[in-house]
Length: 144
Ligand SMILES: [Mg+2]
Image (cartoon, rainbow, N blue to C red; front, side, top):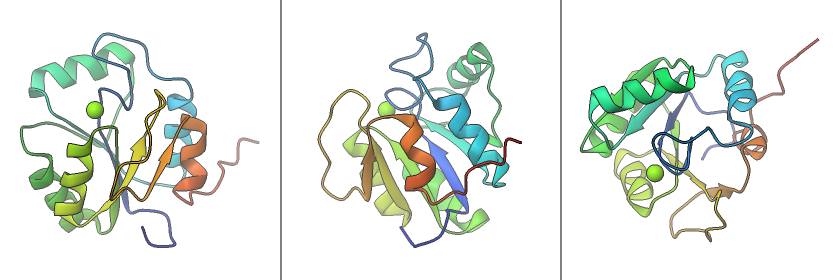
């Protein structure tokens, strides 16, 4: 990743935002997304799911995003996002996420929320969501 906040943040769902469909958000997700939003960073969910499935999940947890993609091929979506926004980063937990980010030419920050070790090719990892804002060089939100 370059030494500046990303122009967009793409988010895998299972293993990154929640442990799995139907389960609660990981601790710290809401506050961190708020911080990214305060820095005007577009937030886009890219999930290996059907469009209906991922939209139902997002509705369930009560969050909103700039774009939501249920897809088979994350690399294709991420490539389009890079063209649309410029340099970005994918947050994801699976080696296939790292490969898709690499193929699309964007950064990959690995979600290691269940103790995973660093994957080859990842730009870094986070073990808790409250680490993400600093790792992405996003200024702290002014909450005053
Ligand atoms: Mg995942």
